[in-house]
Length: 165
Image (cartoon, rainbow, N blue to C red; front, side, top):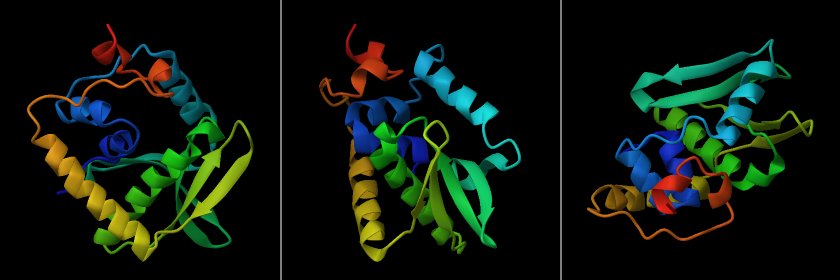
């Protein structure tokens, strides 16, 4: 079973947030960190093709760019603090595209730091993703959410009030 990249990324960070997202619990859209992300998306890379939606994969790719004659799928992040989860989310995009027989590389772009990191999908990554998808499917069938556990991401999370009110 495939899941949206947003849910997959949430699963890697916080199982409870993924459970909430699987049940269409909408995050607080007035969350300042969501606003910052939207601003960065709108105001950077103005010449690039951005926010490409692939309906049958429930995926919205941040950007497609061309570098040295090769196309890349790019994930834009506001800082390198979210680099690890950004890389894993991008590898999931690459995995979804590979299923569709589209072989591309990925780029993590951090405009505020003027950083760019090339990402490829390895066979070990595919194994890791498929194992996570099985665990995510198990989570989908859980009647109750996982317990709320405060982690470093909680303070900025748009689902915070679902856990700690």
